[in-house]
Amino acid sequence: MADVEEDAGLGQFESADLGLKRTMSFTQLLLLGVSAQIGSGWLFAVLSAAGVAGPAAILAWIIASFLVGLIALAYAEIGSMLPRSGAIVRYTYLTHGSFAGWIIGWAYWLSAVTIPPIEAIAVITYLGGKWPSMNFLTKQNGVDILAWPNGIVFGILLMILFFILNYFGAKFLSESNRWVTIWKLVLPTLTFLGLFYILDSSNFHAFGGFAPMGVAPIFHAIASSGIIFSLLGFRQALDYGGEVRNPQRNVPLATFGSIVIPMVIYTLLQVAFIGAIRWASMGLSPGDWNLLETGSWADGPFFHALDSANLAALTALGTLLLIDAAVSPLATGWVYLGTATRTGYGLAVHRNIPPMFQNNNKFGIPWIALIVSTVVGCVFFVPAPSWYQLVGFISAAAVLTYVMGGVGLPVMRKTAPELPRPFFLKAAGFWSPVGYLAAVLILYWAGFSTLANVFTATFIGLPLFAWYYAWKHGWMAPTPAAVLGAVFMAAWIWIAREGGWVLTASGGQSKGGWSFWTYFIAFTVALVAFCVIMWALSNAEGRLHIERSAWLLWLLLGTVPISYYGFYGPLDNPPLAFPWGTLLEMALGLTAYYWGVRSGFATDEIRDIVDSRGRGRPKEFAESGPV
Image 1 (cartoon, helix red, strand yellow):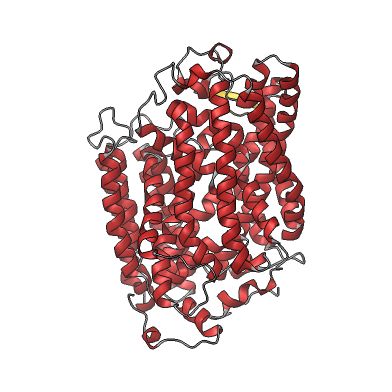
Image 2 (spheres, helix red, strand yellow):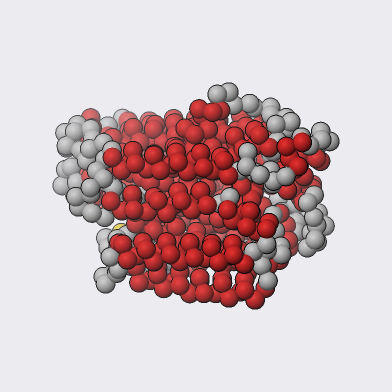
């Protein structure tokens, strides 16, 4: 595709994907989704989930898969109607405008760009645990993290490998992924069968019962231990929608197929791992579920489980597992670097970042977006060089973006009713808010400390919006935009540092941090002041887009105190004990949902799509307004 000009105009959304090559089949798309989910999650998440919920982690996988299926329902209709590369990041622009689109797009890009480094960390952790002399790992608070320089430099080299595999196009990616995915399906199946042979049934009931920590930790395990992280791959079918043949049929089928297959595999693996636990081999007392991440199996749960059986056949399987410890995360890492690239591409389509990020190489890959995603991914090796430290952030950042499917579908039903919908969601008035609430609750279950990091990282992207989009699109004059962004950036960094909740090694609050209400008031005032000042300095178009994003800010800000005072917050005796905090979050979510649906409007982009399909535009599209 030729370079995109700065003033490309309204035809961008429909014409942007013309340079992408529709070469993927349904099987290739399905395998991309499955491959994206069977990566480091199957190597580490079963231990992490058991450490949070005990044997009840088995239920957490089933519940999580069901919730992801609910989230995917709305996206199945939207994705079949508008198959686009970088899809999820682009739909918000069509329903709620550029400001909400930037917030969601930035969060989505953050989640996507951090997955390749966490997959690289998984590879290095398994190898470092097997061969300590390589000096890949060191201990911090009892948890294995990448050591400098050996571990981190090796991680950067793996990121370069991901870059090379993505650079040569989606067809190369999907073809090479086919055989890797078959391997990734076979080996977990063999591992389950091998561990089932040595299963100790007492682990499911003898040490505190099936749910030794109670019911509430089951939901916390969904959001924080790597379960949702392991199930995020359903979005691959959406993100590669502009590069697949017959997308109206293949996108919905691949989306749901890539949920069901991993659910079965992960649930069986969780059963097998719990049954294979040998407490003495771990260096733990029987029933020390909450200490699993500090035990001697943490750097390679399945390898150690197989090795502890001391059977020749299982030892041979353990050797294959070490090979897979490299293959599975590497395959997932290179797929997700492609996702991050297409997310950057989608942001450029809507001119939130410079149009050069749309430029494709001769293989049809947005190469500048690929380079930036690779470099930024490498940065995450420094503040969070551990799989267990990074997984909660990635999960929450991704789920934050999924609230838009349930809100966006009813808006598109009203603003673009004439667009063909090969997959039409029946009873959408029920399923849309249900899928939306599934995303909201998973976000809440992530816990206060994780949300403090995610929200801080999400809103630190607002100055970029002011510096580039707001003035480039004519909302604000350049000087006020530059000053507003700079002041907010400085204030935001100061609040994050002084509050003491962000980027702490323990996941809690650093010593000397502010009280919660000091932190929350400063957090809220800074964010609201930025939005109000931008609104006051913007033209009519800018004000419309900012106003229609208020419901999203209400949801995120309202979640902060509920999370702090709820079961998943830092208080020993939370006043919003389970399930009251969850119920209050549902009430907050529903108010935001109906406000969000009401805030949706016929954006210029959705009008452009309707017009380009040659079906005319209904009279009610004459003015942008609520639907």
